[in-house]
Image (tube, one colour):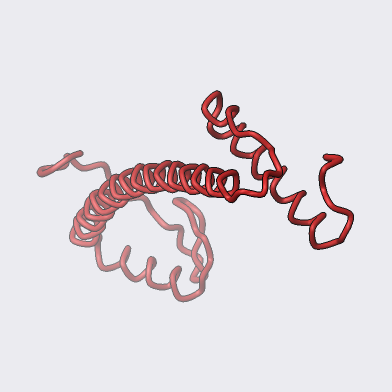
Length: 144
């Protein structure tokens, strides 16, 4: 602790805060911040200089945060765009599979959905008949 700090609790807290501010600014502003002096002059010039440096540091932090937020927003927009495209593709594929499925396969699927059982191809449904996979078809249309 600086020997020039006062012993009264309030003055001590102010002095600690001031020393922290100077250390913080020195680390944030680098060489420019190193020119800050810790003087206890009776003039308010030292306090004003520190206040200005704090304001500059806060502006710098704000601009860095805004840049980071803008960058993250762009990444998220791109992810949303990709997810929308993927969703559209899956909806088209789902519609195609519904159109190609036989009524028996649709009934099997509906039974599976209602029971909530994760039945895969070749595994029996609650009725005892195995779920048969659809035959491979050539896709006529869009592909990503």
